[in-house]
Image 1 (cartoon, rainbow, N blue to C red):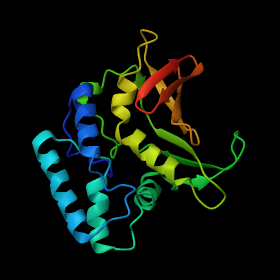
Image 2 (cartoon, one colour):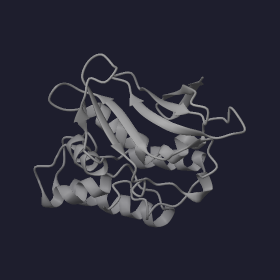
Image 3 (tube, one colour):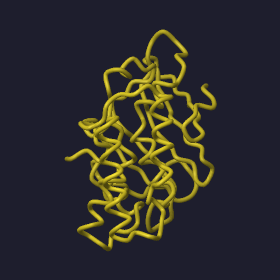
Image 4 (cartoon, rainbow, N blue to C red):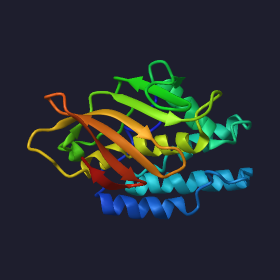
Length: 212
């Protein structure tokens, strides 16, 4: 599949430079905006292409969404576009399951890491990735829109986030599961050691908050 995370187009940038550019690009984002006129959309597409060509940075799939919006005018909700991407990415799409958590949760799983951007410059992360197991909140009909957008951002920047986690041991651990918390800005990754020990790393937005 064509990577929703533009894995073949992006270039590595140091984290501080990447975050600065991401914030700059995000100032004019049409994600979540109601004014999606043709002029606005086309202008934004040109702007995003400019950043991609100059820096090799891609902003959260926004250009892919807007280009599709130009041909499918009903797809005005970015979260719906994200849902389509994740349903394609995961082996069985996003499926509802009670699991071991209270409330309505949605799950996705895949061992196909080709769509995920993983530059060689970040390959020495303490947390290694063999597969993606994602858990996010919703209701009985669908995943929550904000959680979908958060999940896409996490997967889009996953290589950076995992690389930013301080090494806790000389031996690497493996990503076990990513959980997006409802309406808090917090998300967690569970990791597992070669001995079977499991613990969590807590993030708030883009920052590591706690390990252990």
